[in-house]
Amino acid sequence: MEVDLLWLTLIVTLVGYLYYQLTKNNEYFLEKPIPSLPVRPFFGSSAALLLKQATFSDFIKNAYEKFPGVKVFGMFETTTPFFVIRDPELIKRIAVKDFDHFVDHRPTFGNHEDSDNPYVLFGRSLFAMNGQRWRDMRATLSPAFTGSKMRQMFGLIGECGEDMVRFFENQMKGSGSVEVEVKDMLGRFGVNVIATCAFGLKVDSFLDRDNEFYRHGKEMMQFGKLSVLLKIIALRMLPKFCAWLGVDVVSREQAVYFSNIIKETVRSRESQGIVRHDMVDLLLQAKKGTLKHHQEKEMQEGFATVEESDVGKVEMTKPMSEAEMIAQCFIFFLAGFDTVSTSAMLAIYELVRNPEIQEKLYEEVKKTHSELGGKPLTYDAVQKMKYMDMVVSESLRLWSPAPAIDRLCVRDYVLDDGEGLKFTIDKGTCVWFPAHGLHHDPRYYPNPEKFEPERFNDENKKKVHLATYMPFGIGPRNCIGSRFALMEVKTVIYHLLLKFSFERSENTQIPLKLRKGFTALGTEKGMYVRLRARKNV
Image (cartoon, rainbow, N blue to C red; front, side, top):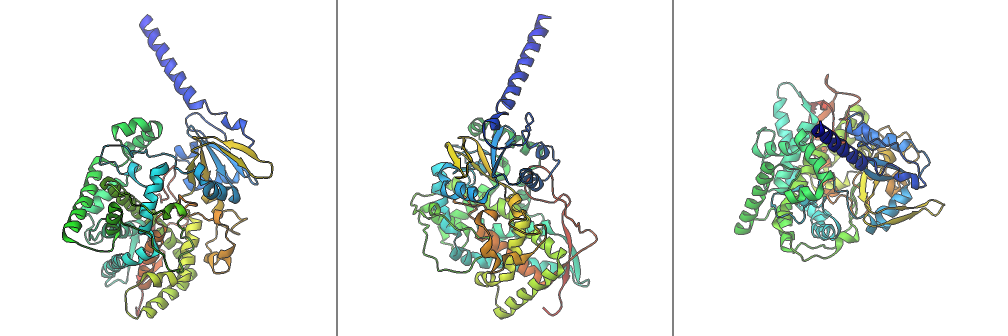
């Protein structure tokens, strides 16, 4: 009986301690002069996300709309206090002017900069780095993502587009059309692009549908698996312990596979003097500390393109380690396989829903093709397609790639709006910029649920506030690969639209249903359309 009582006491003590840890901060926002969302133990304010009752986009939009007219409100993401900044001027101040207080992302997937494990990928990537190490790596990588560097590797992306089109032309011989699952199609295109640009490989994931590179990549992207979710929870709750153990989101098998590819590519490039003007060449220069910023001639680039800050323009001579180089290639794969392909998919979805816009864009594509006079598509030709940029910019507004953008407060920050709102954002708490909420706010975008590319014509885009349009983030910690992503999205749409029209099929889901939960933007059941061959192309 005494033993049973002892065990009962231990269990009650442990449960009580766990409950205390989960609820000790629940009254945090009562001391702040701002409203806040209700809090539940363990779930914080995000039960709808964790229980998969809402999509991430809808959760952000619904939270944003709960406090109209309020500049800042509070919430908990599990046990971490988040300040949600609704006011564009405050967002700009925090993200740009006072960036030194908010340098880092929240370490959701761990940070293993000091780990001896060579197969830690995500934790050693630019996205996961903090503080001065992030600054150094950003400055090291930044010259690789300028317009001139994109121009050099553009031909490799164009080849992938042409290969994809030939595949589908062969598929529809005799019928004139074929139904495709768009995310699968664009994911395969994205894999081909990343293989050739970031890994130095030539793969064709359309003809060889189960090639080794694609198979390992798809396995690596299974973030919904229970084992991966448990890793993410452990990395979030016990980051130092996981770093000591060398736990990473990416499995050891995939980490070894992709690491070996890069190592072999580097060896062959260095021993044979091979130059392809791809990302591997640029990273090799960064590895040697010879990749430098050069004065760029001014050129018209996409509206969504983010500009590099002074942080990224610092001259760096510190070489990049081989492990760091491999980790950056992994991040390129992650972005190309999922984020870029999803953004292109949603743009195509809107073209299917709006055939008059599709036809207008086709006319511009056809005009560009004619002006090229039979020559392959070029980077400069893509930049001159104004309506293409309007369509893609509007799609990125309507379907925010990152519904919310996070920053970790690295030292106490006094927020003062100059109009009576003044309080401290404490070190260790986080801020969220609710991009999806701002993108759908009728104050900034009238009739926000309508797909309207004219919002981004030459006249209207001048009226868009910097902090109400954030598809690639804002401030010095914005997405370094915005030029690459936009180049890829526009290129794949150009090649497909030149040869095919996008039409509804019996399996086209309108309205499109997105996955619920705290996951990347994606659909529940795929997005099907019919590609129909154009005549006289």
